[in-house]
Structures are given as C-alpha cells and as structure tokens.
Length: 413
Image (cartoon, rainbow, N blue to C red; front, side, top):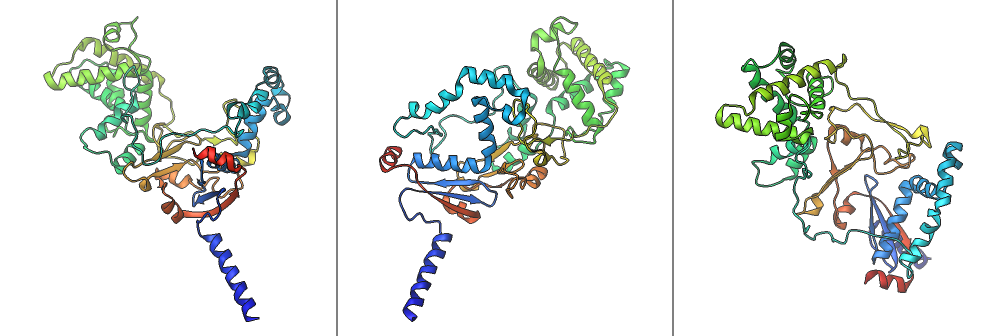
C-alpha cells in the first residue's frame, strides 16, 4: 500500500511539473506560450512547425477575420450580410480566385502543402540598413520635421527619447508659421484681421490638446497651409521657389526663419506677407464655433476596408476620451494600431502596446485590456527571449505536430 501511494505521489508530481515547467519533452511538439497580455510566443523545432503554431494561435484570436477573408474571395459574404453583397459574390465566383487560393499551398510548396513566410533576419542579427527618419521624396511632413527636433542635439537614441517622441504632440509647422507671422506683425505688414487671429494664439504652447481654442485655431491654419502657396495666384513667386503643400511650406518656413536669424531680414518679404495674410484671413473664415474636441470613435467589430457593417454590434468598442487632437501620437489611435519599441542592444528591454488589446475575440480577457496604456501613452514589457517571456507567462498550450518526420527535416534545413 505504501509503495502504491509513493508511486501515485511520484506520478502526480511529474504531471504537476510538466504542467508548469516550460519544457518540451518530445520532438515534434509545438508550444504556444501566452503572456500576461495574451500575446502568443511560439516555440518549435523547425520553421514548418512554427508556422503551423502561428496559424493556430492566430485562429484563436482572429477566426472571424480569417473567415471573412475566406468568404470574400469565395463569394459567400451575402450569406452573412444579405443581398447587398450578391454582386460582389458573383464577381468573386466569376473570377474563381478561391479555387486558385485553395490550390496555392500545393503549387507553391508541394512537399508540405503549406504556405508560410517570415522575416529572414534572425533575432539578435544587426539590421543591414541605416535607420533614419524618412521624409519622402518631396521633403518633410508636419510630423517628420518635429521628430528631428528632440533628437538634434543627442548623441544616442534611448528608450526614453523614443517614448517622449511617441507621445509628443507639438505642432512644429504651426509654431514656425506663427514665428514668421510674428516677425511680419512687428513690421506692420499684417492686416487687422490677421493680427486679431494671431493674438488669439499668443499664449499657445504649440501642443494640440482637446478643449483648447488655440489648438483649434492652429490646426485650422495648418489645414489652410496645405493648399498653399499656389502658382496661379499672387503668391506665385513663393510657390515657384519653395513648392506647395506641407513639404513646400516647411521648406519655406525653415529657409525664411534661418535667413532672418542670420541677417535680421526676410527673403521675399512682401510676398511672404501676402501669403501669411491670405492664410490667416482664410483661417479666420474657416474657424468652427465650438472648441476643439476629440471626436467620439466607435471601433466596429470587425472594421474592414469594405465598410461592411458590424458582424456583432454588442462587441463594438467605444474609444475613451483621449488627450490630444493630433493623429501623430499613440494617444490618438482610431483602431488596432500596434506599437513596438525595440532595443537592439537588449531584446528583453523591448516595449509595446496594441490598442485596444491583443485578442479580437470578445470573450477573451485581452479583448480590451490595453486601453489604460493607450490612454496614458504608456507601453508594456515585450521581451523576446524565452527566459524573460516565462516571467510573464499566463498559459502554455502544447500541440503535437501534424508535420511528418520528413517534412520536419525539410523545414529545419
């Protein structure tokens, strides 16, 4: 009896250990470790098994999305949405895309019958291209010009500096425009209406905040700027020299302010005065009565490019009131926008957040659990090494690989 009890105790101990320890005992097992935020970390012996695990984990969070994509190509959306989608379904069935999609795995990879891809650059490898702030071929945009400023005098790019930039909501283009307008005002080159609007911005701190009349005025000015200067108006000289839209505006403002700092004179002063007056007076006529507000946003379940209605209205999520009217910060995300800060010197110092949560399953505790991070502009740990991941483990699921031995050997080559 004592031996039997001892045997049972040993067996129970083994079962408990296997359930809590992150150890893969058998070859051909796929392990899905979910952390405290519901993010799946997948471990396997080869690429084929990793891809299978990734597909399995994705289905757990996004089955509905995969189903809608399948139905769209198969021409069966009208079974869910009704007759309004019949014409789309007819087109898809006529094109026969679904049949080709079904055949693709065996055509592309006849040996395994799988379609999978991933970055070929391993974790811990150095990225081969220089990382810089892109401005596009036509120059700066209102956000990129601001990104340079906090980093201009720094010798290194730290996590703290990234976080600051990511939450920054200063409008550099509006600030520089107001600096130019202030110089022209001191020279008595602005109209009364322009001066009146300029005075409304005298105490503004250049941040785009809700419930701020000054921020509302500034955003109106920036919107008007995007349509100027034009080559077929009295600002033709300015337009021909600096270009139009935001990239031209930024080039104009930087050039004029740098010239003034150097010589105390503005280039093309008369033309610049005409341009600034036009913008301020047009902005005054475009101002809304109400103070700037962050509009209410409802994230439809599931939002899609086709604009289809919600498939489950009870799961529609109302975004909380955020703190800025600027769409260039993590404080204002209109949907599932993923942010990750990667420390190339230590992958376990990575940070991330996914608005509003990692799972798209309304029954999941991770459906809406990162909203607090979203509202405060903060991030969560996003460690990449297995050792660090296990510090935040919430669940471990083990799958037996459907990949046969020959295919496993091929996947590891």
